[in-house]
Image: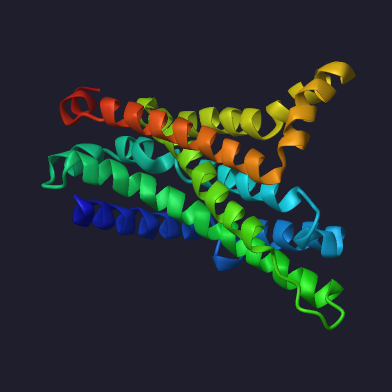
Length: 246
């Protein structure tokens, strides 16, 4: 199954590159988001970006959602629209290989772009605010960002696979993923800000008292449970006979 998954993942990454060129986006277009966000935010934060700022941790969860949502909608809906899904399902590739390969391609792409953005932010801070001193992320912070970005990519990847499996067209899958990503990216923030001040303080106080390490562990555990649940749902939904009949 691992060999099948690697084959499908390579196919997905190659097709994604072809689609980007077809839309008139070269390498620079693909890197535009990390170039803008990976430079602008660290530039504004200065040395706090690698010390006291909470933005890198938030950034490491937020960025994968954005990157995965831009590619995962095509995973199965595009195959169905181009009438190549039946051919793929009729191949010798295992069901698990197809599912995990498509998911791994989207998650790997988003995770890689997020880590590139965080590295770019580190370079930006050193060039503009370093003053001859080498600034690095603290080891605990760097590990947390790597872990949270992977789990965040897995969360949106699991949602995207389920959406793409049920969508008859790429356009419909993209519309659903846009709504989901906006809800995840901004809905939580606005919902929190809409709460009365006393409620917000009551929610924040335990988090502040627990410390950053425990909050990160709790967030990682929650994301891991969600990722596992979504993956189980995708595995239950992904059946050759059902998809061919659909």
